[in-house]
Amino acid sequence: MSVVIHHNPECGTSRNVLAIIKASGAAPEVIEYLKTGWTRPQLLALFAAAGLTPRTALRTTKSPARDLGLLDPAVSDDRVLTAMLAHPILVDRPIVCTPKGVRLCRPSETVLDLLDSLPPGPLAKEDGTPLIDAEGNRLV
Image 1 (cartoon, rainbow, N blue to C red):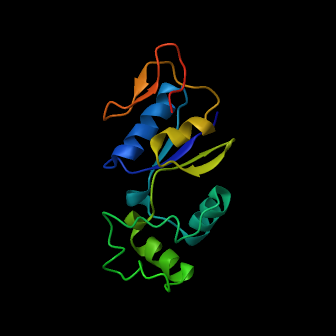
Image 2: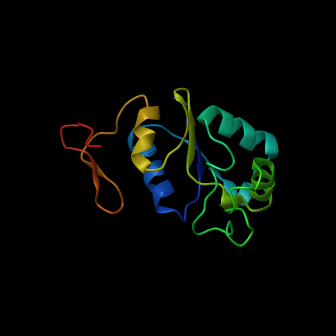
């Protein structure tokens, strides 16, 4: 299965999602978008495939969104998108692409719906929250 994750290694949710993908046996292509940045066509395609808008994909915490005035509902999607190109941290993460679809995987267990098979259990998030039990049953 082809899996691409737009990843920030400093983000716990992104690390959890990457660990789940790897535990499932997939070898994902990892794109560290803070290093590579985004292009307008790339973001528009990802958002369209995931059913997102720039506003719904905007990271509002731990980002410069407030300082840039992007939290005002009157700000256009085009202005949010332009800011995302200049400040890649504004895009919420991780975004995962597989043949089953594209999703913003928050919470991290959202990625389970995009995988061909569940990882073997038991499996838990970094914080200890169980996701899959020892028998391989999904808990969330």
